[in-house]
Image (cartoon, rainbow, N blue to C red; front, top):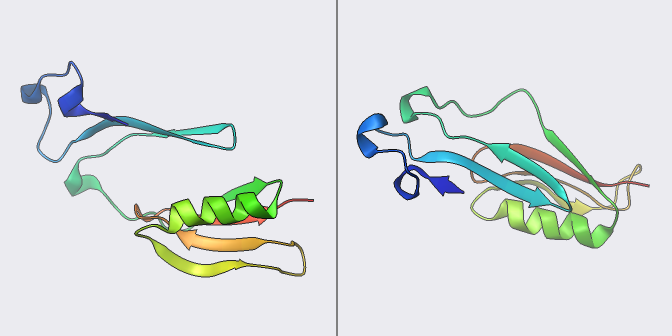
Amino acid sequence: MLKIADSPIPASATRPGHHIVHANICIDGVELAGADVEAHNYKRPTGFYVLLGVDSEDKVDSCFSALQTNGQVILAPQQTFWSSRYAIVIDRFGVPWKINRGT
């Protein structure tokens, strides 16, 4: 994560509420990147899930554990008719995730 305060961008060039230049997260070799928006423009994500397919039950549990910290558990990791391990969680930023062990 690169914060404005840790970047060469002068504080006077940013507006109040803009704190993050960008952030990256690497999950099982896949990198996702995002950027901050000004606080008055933020809206909680709705109408979608990020679908994360992993190759083991342990990875489902590990990803779920990391994403549920300060978030909201919708469905704890469990077996379903289509997967040996499946979970749903909304992370601390309000991003909804479905984590599935693929075949």
